[in-house]
Length: 363
Image (tube, rainbow, N blue to C red; front, side, top):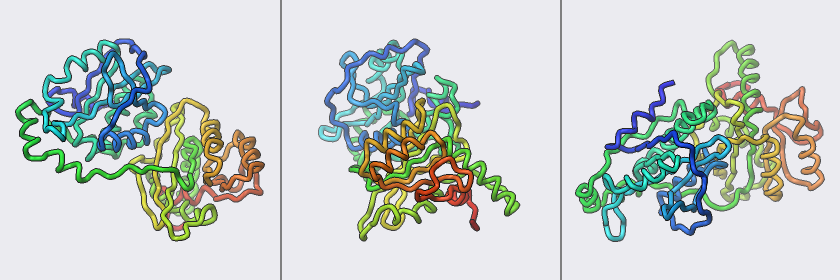
């Protein structure tokens, strides 16, 4: 496969990628107090969507404080991710100019850490593309195709020329950072009013089965699923779960994806969706744990949050019995018929949202 992020390794342009084949030293200090800026806060929200279980903040290694770290001890990689601004706001002082961070980057490379530097402009204007660069680097380290899934239709960030000391001063004079920071979207904060929890293994299988079903019915070929269309269908059932009373409600959509099973029949090019009185916030959790336990832990940690569970696996039966006993408010999205799950509970036939996701017009 042509890993295009290697095109970015030219030190004269962002993104700057420094790869190492040294066994990583995973030792660092944790719980270091930091004050992230607006762009770092926004990008952390984005990184959480794609690298939730692997993202580390507020650490220090030999007096160096990475902006972000993505790591897996099990798979043996650790990546320092930096967001470079051309100058500091208050004093308009040049920072991150050519050569300024070479010693720092060499330190991390010699410790076996890969380093990716994005310009601040890139993480604001191309956040999904920046995450694609990171995912492709993880694929390069692990050869696990799960890190490529969903990024095919997301473009890489446009390259940006690095700045020297003089150009940094010039960019400060013209207020360069103001030009792109005005487009910065505020990250969603606060607790969700409801959740849609999707078992990625089940979603992949249900989408394949649904595609075959509607191809037989309509004689048409259908492409990849789109999460926007999936949620458009599931939204119909939210009034049965939670009442809006005219207020905007935040719905957390979490797709749990096993690193051992590919989810190639969906694109991940979505992070936020507003429909009527609902604001949908998306998160893709890639995990090496058993998904039903991940979802069970999430529900048990948020017992007062109503949810839709999209899955159909006998492994959930014990969880469901506990949720019933505790009188939790939930709806199942499952097979119909041929389900493994209890038939007396509220449910959605998964062929409807899956059909809508792949573009079926008549369900």
